[in-house]
Image (cartoon, rainbow, N blue to C red; front, side, top):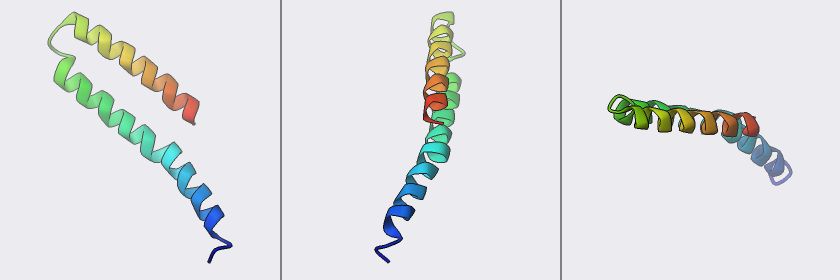
Length: 62
């Protein structure tokens, strides 16, 4: 069992980095837009900047 542990940890980390984190970022972007994006232009600009930065971050992770 100990021989397979590093492989399992590696697969688990890749799954977390490539699947879980982008899903969390997507839900954060959607929630941020639904709560704040409809009320003012300033908040929409902030949301657009946040979307851009999070997209760049997720592209860097992948």
